[in-house]
Image (cartoon, rainbow, N blue to C red):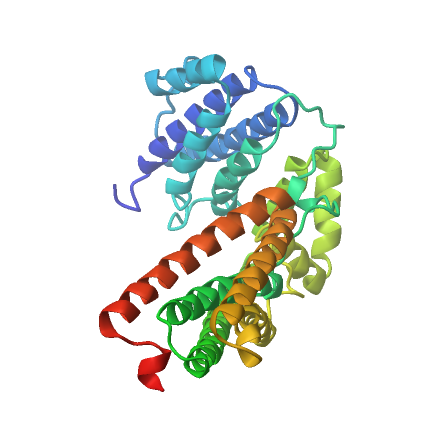
Length: 384
């Protein structure tokens, strides 16, 4: 329909009326924060509908009667909410509102706040999906990510993760490499050289990989923050509304959430910091250091890889092999136990898993090396 045809207002009016009726019907199915938010959305849709009624009167177009019953698709949504709960329905509403969020962007006759209101609808449904329907407006239902218990170990910098994977990979991979050479019966100096080469190659490879990974992740985070800053400059009302919805989803009543959001938005720096933390889930002060992650990975891999090399610095043959196997086994138990404790799976589980995987890798390469050594006659005597 053309932009100068006032009959287009009928479509807007019908959509706003239907949405208001649906939200009020859904509010009867739930309670607490969800009920309050749905009723607020319905009132917002009523305001929009009144605007389009006014525009239709000014254009001399007859206004149809207000519907009193849901259409078949909306009635099915309400029935689904009664039978299976609100979560799936809220997800469907979020998807629908996201698809229709720009319906007033090119409409010159819409009120200034209407495009922002439409975008807020999808955000509201997203917040309500994580908000319990039985909570009252006085209940506090904070997001679990905001509770700083000491047992929640979150490493956004990548340094701890790099150290854990580095020492584990260094231990397993270099043990397997050295066992493969040792299994062939080759001279001690060659085994030592292979172990040191594997240590250096693996450490530099891990460091380079971690640097690129964390640097790319940091670039992505910085881009998200820059986009949030741009939205804050261009659409401060929408961002304040979004912040208000975040705090309402956490359990604050409407007025307290509104006052809190307004107070935060009064300082642009505080507003950006808060939105980045609350909406994006990022700590702007700790986005990860590529250099630290690379250094941590290099050192950790080298430490893990050095364990199996150590005996060959002083001796060779069977003695060095037995000591290397024993040291590697002990190191795998220690590293696996530490990883298990850090991850919450338990020290025993982590230790046994690390030992099993490392032993399997080392055992396979040892016997492959033994077979190759036997077939080729590659042993210490042949090299002497």
